[in-house]
Image (tube, rainbow, N blue to C red):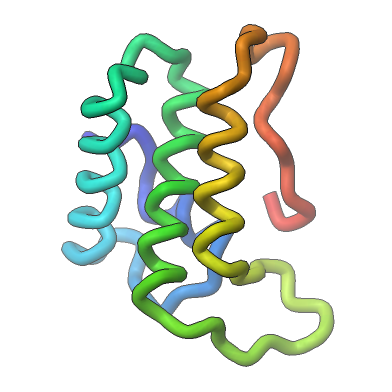
Length: 108
């Protein structure tokens, strides 16, 4: 099982992919492999979940153009660089999760 779920990812990025689709699972696996390759697996479950969903959202944003949105939509889509920057920011944090919680979004 991945560090995050498809529903975690869908909560932060607007995508047509179903949360439990095979393609979503593959994207999460790729994100989790990057986490393992970077030796980040000793981080807390909260941090791993956050990093995994940001890296997965980055992949989705790279594959799909930003969809049209209406004012007031609760789930947004940003450029891929945004999701990567948020993941890297969390990776670089030196303080425990209890002191510095994950960045929150209005739709979370």
